Image (cartoon, rainbow, N blue to C red; front, side):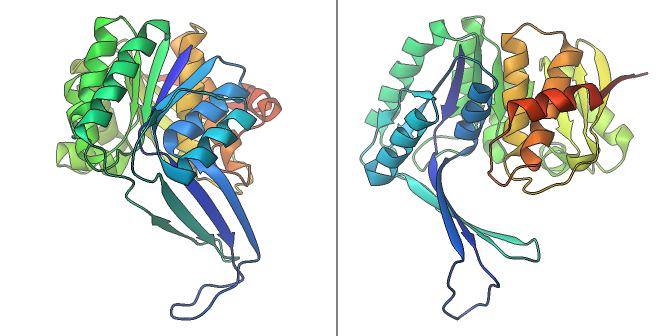
Length: 309
């Protein structure tokens, strides 16, 4: 089973507008409401790939009820901790020029009792997991070392832990040496305090992550693919050019592919290939955090995974 942790879920509201002008009344051409949050995207894609998935986290209020019902409709198993606060909404406003304006609510305030309830649920679910994934931000009241504690518990249980977050959550998480991380160039610069524009800068950062106990470190390069390191080896992953409809959720889809590959005990090159295929397949869809299984399978032979050096 792939256990996915999404602590700061959201109702994603996607508005299509002819234009966006500040200080005026705008009418949407279309509106979509879907369960959101990076972890829910991971869970959705991994479920589409045919994996046994369970997602957990905090849900509260009518928005939380909406997410719980929608995950059932999508065939995703959920086991959430109910909270007193209202689960957030996140707005994405799309215009024909390709611009996307996002408004992200902070999420509910989590109290100490709710944190304890989640920690207990995590301890109950962890023995059932083959792979653990934690994605995204955390709501108010959750300390920035919370992921680090979950990572240490997973390591003690012999479970690989995939961490996809940013800022202090990522920095503190790396101190606990998760199995997998996926920073981009900006996040490397924030973590290391130096530029990561040249390939040699990225390769050095990946080597450092491996030396610090990360088993699989991937640096995303967007449409250019990624640089990865595992088992003392470095890899360049190149993806084919495709018609991009919506890149939002591609990183989450990549993580889902990696989680599925690890759950299937694939060789590292095939884990990287599956991750890249899922990330690329998501960019070809309008919906965020969604892939078509047949698209993923058609992309797999077109992903190049080369050893560096």
